Length: 183
Image 1 (tube, helix red, strand yellow):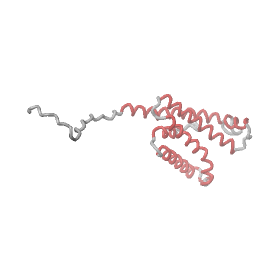
Image 2 (cartoon, rainbow, N blue to C red; image 1 turned 60 degrees about the horizontal axis):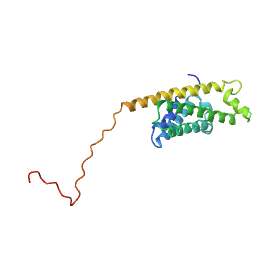
Image 3 (spheres, rainbow, N blue to C red; image 1 turned 135 degrees about the vertical axis):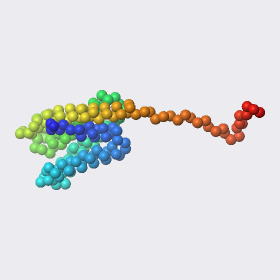
Image 4 (spheres, rainbow, N blue to C red; image 1 turned 180 degrees about the vertical axis):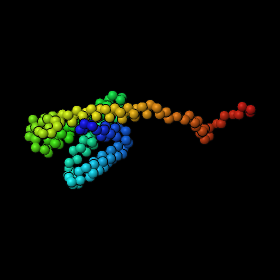
């Protein structure tokens, strides 16, 4: 898979759309933190320090929280195409937050031109960051489309809850009872 081509952006956006209450925050962030920590333990144990892990990953988790908040603000009842656009906006948000953090931390010039370099060309000797943006945007739209499409299809197939017929209220005390037809 290309770098930054990930379902994570869509997952956290859709968690904001579909998971109720605090579960929409805790579940996706805990899953991502657990998997990031596991990947670091398995593949990069020589570089793993809990302090560095938290500091290095914090821009990602700030962006993920922003995607969850975006999903909450958009709402799940919107049309499919609008939710896909929301997922793509979330991918743009992720890209801007994480690349701005890179601009602040890495040896980019702390100027407007340095920030533009961080967003487009990246550091000399590394892949250009616009390629990461392309992959982030396309995967955000693609996976959001899949997740939202699956949810819309299952919502359409679920029967509406049956409405119980209204029961007649018992007559109020002291009210006249209807007379028997035989009397």
